[in-house]
Length: 159
Length: 189
Image (cartoon, rainbow over all chains, first blue to last red; front, side, top):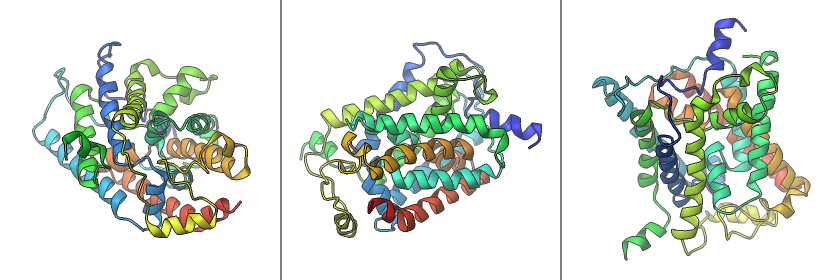
């Protein structure tokens, strides 16, 4: 793997804002998270059953959820770009492009396996714990361990 | 039916999907943040156990919004469960119910089957694979792929990024293979 590639994958998940958020201003993200978590539970997206029904093509529900979320997302991002809408702090909105590497294939398949087993992507894990299924703390810790081991082995893995 | 009763019912996809999609512009507008959840796992590693690994050496404090966001998701889970909970048991398709019965999984009182996801189950081979091995694959796989359902399938595709489409297709292929071809063996352990 060359250096430029390394740099790109190393900054993923790092936000584009140049502004530093203070403790108080971070609370607004918590508020968005709360609403998001409620939607997760109320739509039963965090249910293991819904994920099985999706992967066994028994129900349209999850396809409807993800599909309509993507449509709303595409329209919103196009509006933001077309009208050059700024953030509430007046900053230009920057979205980091995703660069292709083979990790998206190998890692993608591996995550797909984990998604079908646990019935959860990283977001739902937090909501599942909130619903009182405390054993999911172990799943979350294991996911953190997985991320850590990836960081450890990163330079030895094909990208 | 009162509003609160309607809210307590499970929400249909055409309500919840667009609400999830709206998270994308909201996070961009309130602070230039790209929607993505699996990064939170990386930030936790960077904050707690960086171990001199270059992948975890960055200013995670600048990314702490993401940790506030996932903490909010956890709180949202509590609020939805204790104040807005659906009084009826979850509905699952008859096919799934039939399949699960063959593995002795018949308790469908929660959003997750308690016979698979519980502390007692953790100490069985089946439970260990579902809880620990599955979780590891989620954490390792999302970081290797550079994102999860939120960062790639929703945020990436919203920004018309083809690598995100590739990643999403691979998530789905992996899920189809696991749910249909491998999981039956794990469930029968």
